[in-house]
Image (cartoon, rainbow, N blue to C red; front, side, top):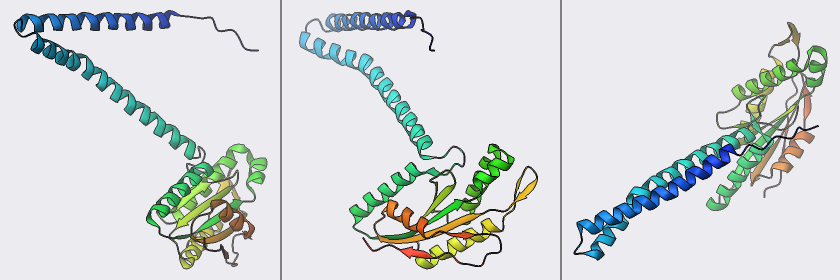
Length: 253
């Protein structure tokens, strides 16, 4: 049950007083400036009016413009911070699914302007035993495992590749500009690093159970189709496994 919050209009009345005081102050200052310009140029009333208007514009307009510009920059910074938070996962620091969609939309806009075809690949990775780790050791160890996997992926892929957490236990890696050979090399390095890594939960070693799949694209980026294709081609990989991950190629668009 929500409690009724008592109305407190003290701050609102303070703002009203500031506004009224500002209006009165501007009016008085304008009259003073006009008066002094008329006194100084008593025989030239037109020039006095021009000088008075210029002084009023400078002394009143410049501070208002500066304050408005500062507020605009502050709002822009806050908007950028909000967009950054919305586009990045708080647990792993990776891009979220929404952030990946925004990135791909930007790629598509640049492709349409430059009329150049895109190529690359998407690697889909899922932690199959994430729930088992949480059930056995506690939810905090699930987050530790997610952070561990995200860090390992980020250090195993290329600098310009985008790592996104697109599900509770899944990650997508977008490799823009990668050839099939590049994608296979990145995927092999990634799976080898993950399956040979050592993760300990509460002092006990945990072997990662992963599913990895990939899809190649050329022409344009249809992110939803890429995700479905990569997920459908996923195979289970484990420590010591020698089976290579295959990539399915989407039709050119």
